[in-house]
Length: 614
Image 1 (tube, rainbow, N blue to C red):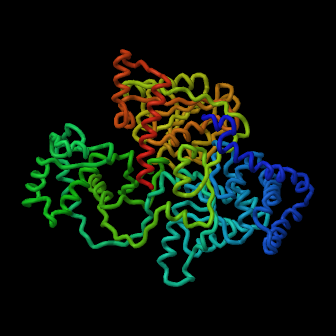
Image 2: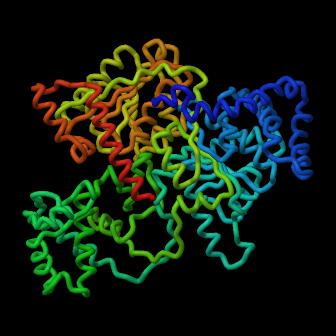
Image 3: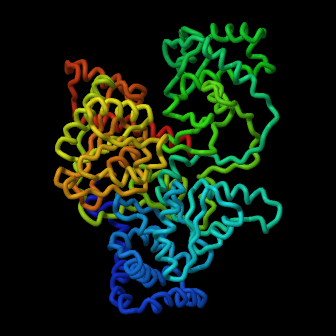
């Protein structure tokens, strides 16, 4: 913390201080609202709408409107907003991002600005990351709005256009970012005005805003039609790819190396650059492709398609991994979202990569499609007149929110102090040693009835750990993209005494893990991360599953120098540290220096990714 922050407080502390008078005003109306009958409380909505028509502003109505929702929530749900939740509600109404810790009741916070902004009658969209949460929140929080006389709708994947239109015409609509984006695209393709399902994009509150506006910022939503091209070439190139031999390059071909006339010596038929996710044919490989297709020169314009499809097949075999990047289900290739671990139905890789993977996995290769309409989430959400967002982790990306979306991030204080202990990373030489250590830690916690949540980045790792725990006779639940139907049920039980849950990133979102008394006594939920994610934010989300509402808990990441992040970004330096310390097999080292070296590697990648999204 710099000197300025020490003297004047951080940006967030100054902003929270600035809105305290509004919070005090809202609090002061509490007893007045308590005296009202249900009918009188409901009548407040009509009164506020009338005052808006007469020239009042939303800002002037805020304390009364918030106090009304607070009282309604107490009567309908038996839940009353804390002061910190009122602060969060004000930040959201101002079109900013409220960073609130997991378990601080973000869902309840959204009712405040949603009600206030819905009074204008132009529609409010509450955006969630999946259908399950949209439906749950519409039914749960929707009761408060309906009690106050507002209409509430929900848009789900399998709805017909007329059902969607009815939902968007409600005062408040709960919807996922995907449905919202695709409905916008379809609306842009209609011929008659009557066919539109959405109204103007007025105000939205985005839950898990970092996931939607940063992780998926550049994800294009595409509506496509069939093209007439044959799929035969994909199957032929798939056969070829398996005959080519992977080689190595003596070093990376940088611009500087080219200027200095350095020669890159390559072996094999192709080389793979995992850092940049690129595959290149070597001279020897080019000759083999030419011979296979009986062509003279692969670089000729008429052979571009062969070249493109050969590279795609090599990418499919060397850079795209089953049960990590995608799963095969019902003779289809389904993409797994690397940030949430959830399956993304209906999404396909572009430029023919999806077809190359279909050929690799021997499922039916679907024809390529023509793009009819497309938009990215970044461009789509910037079309709203005003947007607010909530998340447990946004400060690491504060600059990006400000630069690209013009949104400020304000950290909201927790209602009770955080009791969770975040331990230094435990680092091992090899993956094998690391996984053995993870299993030992799980067994130890299980013996004292402490619940454990083991976070993995890939489905493959979750299944490997599951097999290892079975051998130890430890009962456990596995939560990954293959079993996501059971998600809420499994996550809800993860805080029971002695529960062991292995989960890919998907468990990080939307469902609270509540501890029972025995689990609380045993030290609360123990979080074990099995490797660091490229993004610090995703790691922080995993940590944030523990220690909600002042509960005890602890977290630790287990890392090996063979992990992707370490292998590609920075393990050489650490390898030297290990060797110089003479670390024996199965011995872990933990040190502040190591943890900060790992965070530096993550910062490097985050900066790269920000550059790409800009």
